[in-house]
Each structure stands twice: as C-alpha cells, then as structure tokens.
Amino acid sequence: MNILILGSGGREHAFSWKIAQSPQCDKLYIAPGNAGTAAIGENVNIGVNDFDAIGDFVKNNQVDLVIVGPEDPLVNGISDYFNADPTLSNIGLVGPSKAGAELEGSKDFSKKFMERHNVPTARSMTFTRETLEEGLNYVSSHPTPVVLKADGLAAGKGVIIAETHEHARETLKEMLVDAKFGEASSRVVIEQFLEGIELSVFVLTDGESYKILPEAKDYKRIGEQDKGLNTGGMGAVSPVVFAKGDFMEKVEERVVKPTVDGLKKDNIDYKGFIFIGLMNVGGDPYVIEYNVRMGDPETQVVLPRIKSDLVDLLKATAEGKLSTTDFEVDAEAATTVVMVAGGYPEAYEKGHPIEGIDTVSGATVFHAGTKLSESGEVVTNGGRVLAITGRGVSVAKALENSYNGIANISWQDVYHRRDIGQDILQLID
Image 1 (spheres, rainbow, N blue to C red):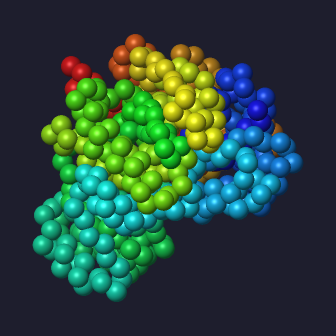
Image 2: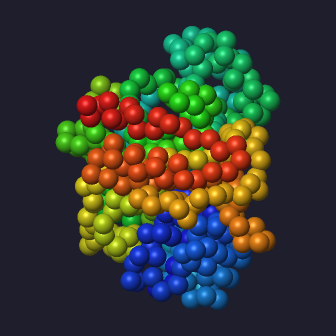
C-alpha cells in the first residue's frame, strides 16, 4: 500500500514511525513532514489545507490510504472533499466528516452534543460579544475557579482557568472584545471547574464499532507543578494507574458508547479517532473536551504500546470493517518529555542547530518543530521541537529513559519540564 500522512508534528512522526514498521506499507509519504519524517518516508511540500494539491498527489501517486494528523483539515472538510470527488471517494481516509469534526471545531457544539446524548460533562453556558453583559454577570455569580474556553480552534491554548472573578471578567472581555484568540474566541464557553485527575482516552471508530486504544495523561502547562500558560503539551505518560477495572467500565458505558451512538443518531459520518479528554472526579468520568484526532504528545506514548500492525486498524477503519480487526497492547509503560524553544508558548526563535539526536540510545526521538537546513543540519522550526519517548517495565523506568535521552540533546535556549509523570508515580506508590 502507498500511504499518505498529513501533518508536520510529533504526532505525524510517531504515525510515520509506526506505519513504516508494517509490511503492508510499500511507500510512505508525509505532507509536509519534518526533519524526522524525512528519515522514514518521503516528505511532500504540500500544506495540510491545500485539498486540491493533496487530491492530485493522491491520484498521481496511487495512494491507497490517507491519515489526517491535525485538526485543521478535518474541521475544514477534507473528508467531504474526498467523498465529493468520484476519483477520490474510493480512497481510504482516516478522519471524520466536517460535521463530525465540529466536536473539536466548536466547544459549544460539543457541549450541546454531550447534553443531547447524556454524556457526563461540566455545566456550562456560551456567550458572544452581543451577550457580553450577561456573560460578565454570569461570571460574577459563578463559583471560582472559572473555566473559559474559546469556542473554536486555538492550537490547544484557548482555555483559561481564572482563579478570581476579576480575572474571569477581564479574560472574558479579552476573548470576546479584544479577540484574544482571533475568530476562535468570537464565542466563549464558560463552564464549571472540575476537581480531579485528568486523563485522555483514545477511541478509533468506523462509525459503527469502535476500539479503545491505550490511555494517556498529558501535561499542558509550561511550568513545573502545572503552573504557567497552557501549551500544546509538555509530556505524556501511559498507562495511567487508575484507568482500569471499574473506572474504565464507567468510561466505556457512560462516555464511549453514548458518544459513538450519538454520532450515529445524529447521522454524522465518522471514521477516525476520537480523543476524549476526561476528568476523574471521585471515581466518575466527566468529559472535558473532544478532539477529532490523536493528541500530540500523547500519540508518542500510545502508538509505541500498540504491538499489532497499526495499518490493519487504520485500513479497517476507513473501510468500515473495524469490528473484524483486533489489536494487542504492550504491558510496558511509555513516557514522553517535550523539549521546547525558549520563550514558548509565547515568542520564541527558530533556526537553532540541534546537537546530540544521533547519540540517544534507550529512547526514541520524535521530531515536532524541526526542519533540515540547506546544509542538511537539523534545526528548530517551532515551539515544541522534540518529544523524547522512553519505554520501560514501569512508568519510573520509562521516565528514566526519557530523561537520559534528553541529557544527550541540546540547542540554544532549550527548555523542558523535569516533573513529567511525578504525580502518576505518587499514585503508584
């Protein structure tokens, strides 16, 4: 099979790494890819939202399967584009329709979906610039902390947790009036703060049946002990110690099944991943958010734990035959720690040469924000630059391998968190 992966981050490098191991993969293309994917397959200089160019490339290169990595092309309707073209509609594509992608594209839509299908979630209300005064009054009467979410896509940074009413009111004005997150915050969802432990559950569905993949816990804040600004993700751990037995039964019965059934009831075409961000509140799962693709950096710990051929699962998803396919999970733990550019998630520099990647042993280096310079040197090309994934018989051993790998790598103004997974280790102890 010829396979095309869309995207350029750590998630797409992890998909490339896993798919390249399949004997079914004859030719692997990544558009646009990064310095890491260039060493595994062939990078193609096409943007993820250039649907015409993607379609032409698929036809001209006999691509059999397309894996959509990031959310943007899904929200913009790449699945619908393929289905509307008779020469592309028979190509397998893993990713939901534009209607399905609204689960991530609009927080307001996803909240209404959850309410409609009785999926447990925090209480919320949505406000616009026209209803700002109502929103300010609502915030003033809301218990603190107050969670404010930009309705649209904001690259994982559109969530603000305000500890005081004053901060919440200021933030609401910034989002609605000053367009803090651009068009993404033209509507703002204000919701109840849930106290508990977060985790991410990943589901693969063909619209009828589903498979629950290994779970993960990620770390969004830039600072240690979960302080500072939100980022796209600073690290991840899998497995999560409490994600088993009775709790996971609740997740499947209360969250996964009604979500997949809800998509069917709403006549939404959905063949792809559902990333369910959950909060464990006293042993009960509540949905914080849906994403319509795999997470980054969670993919870098989930895929290494899948022992089976990933292409089997992806092909079955695209063909609507997921119920006939199974997979095996490795009991070993996987952890990843993200190395970022100094200044991220705010202003940061690009183009710094990266040293030491080739000297890492005992861990896998997944590239995120990298590119090859004209001289062939790997240089930084984003805020989140590398994700160092360790494996081990325990979370502690996996973390040791991740951090040993990090010790070998350097560039100007590099930063990483040193406390990834420490909360999970305390739960294990």
